[in-house]
Image (cartoon, rainbow, N blue to C red; front, side, top):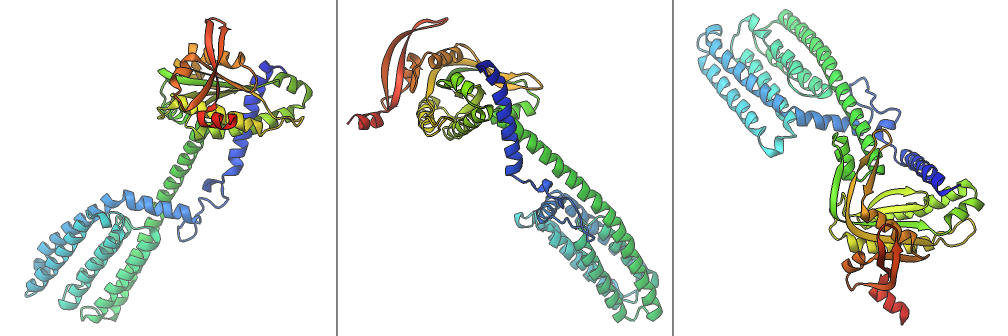
Length: 452
C-alpha cells in the first residue's frame, strides 16, 4: 500500500470505525424498543419521555392557564349580572357574597401565575379554580331555591374543564370527576332536587364526562404524538450534529448546519504535522488490519491530547496527523499549547508498538503564521487549511529528523523561556529558500532535569 492509497483508505476506515463505535457506545432513549409507546391511561411507557412531556406542557401552557382564568372571571361576572333576574328575590346578598369571594379567588389565582414559584406549578392553580367554581355552583343550589334548569349549567364547567383547561389527561379526569361528585353531593343535600331529578342530573354528568374524556383523549393523544415527533426530530438533529462535530470543529459544524458558507482568514494560527517514521516500509511487511489497528491506537491517543490542549484536529492523511491552533477556538495561547501537544504526542507514541514490537517514532513539524480555513465540498465535505503557514509546517515535518520536533524560527520567537530549543541551523525549504529552524527539546525544567 502506498502513502497515496493510505491517504484514501485510512481516513474512511477510521471514520467508519468511529461511527460504529459511537453507535454502540451510547444507547439513545429513542433506540429503546418501548420508547414512544403509550399505555391505556395515555401515559408514555418511558418515564423520562413522560417527564419531558409534562415539563413541556407546563412550560408551553402557562399562557393557556391565564386565558382560562380570565375566561372564568368573565363568565362568573356575566352570570353574577344575570342571576338577580333568574334567582328568587332576596338572594341578592348571597349572590354578591358568592360573586365577590369567587372573583377574589380567581384574581388571586391569576396573580399567582405571574409569581416565579407558580410558573411551572400552575396546574395546582387550575385544580383550585375548578373546585372553587364547583363549590360556588353547589352552594348556590343548597342556599337558594334555584330553578330546575339552573342545575344543568354545571355541565358547561365540566365540558370547559376537559376542552380548555390545560391539565394532562390523567389529572384532568381525576379533577373533573371529583368536581362532578362534589357538585352532585351538594345538590343532593339541598331541597332543590328530588331523587328522580338527581338521577337525571347524575346521568347528564356521566354523559358530559364521557364526551369530555373522549374529546380530551383525542386532543392529548395528538399533542403527545406531536411531542414525540418533535423529540425524534431533535434526536435526528443531535445525531447529525454529532456526526458533523466528529469530522469538523464544533463552531464550524454549527455554522454549516445554519447553511453558512464557511471560509475564514486567520492572521495568527499554528499548524502541526506529525507522521510515523518508516511507515511505508511498515505497511509493506504488515497486514492491512495490523496497520489500521496501529493507526487507530496512535491517532485515538492523539485525538484525546488534541482535545486536552484545546486545539483542533484537522485531518489525517495516511500516517500524517494535522492539528491547528487559533482556528475555530476560543483559546488564545495556542502557540505554547501546540508545543505542549507535540511533546505529549512524542510521549504517547513511545508507548505504542508496531506489529514488530518496536516503539513508534515520529517526525513533527510546527509553524505559526496566517492562513485561510474553510469547508470544501458538499457531499463528502471536509474542513481544510491553506496558505504558506500550512506548507511550511508540512516542510518542517518532512525535512525533520526522527524523534525530533522541528519548528520554524517564527515559532521559536513565540515560545518563551519555559521551553528548551536547540538550533538546527539553516535548511533549504522548497519554495522558500533557506530557513533557520530549531528543535523543540521539551520544557526547560524537564531538559535541565535530564541533563543533571
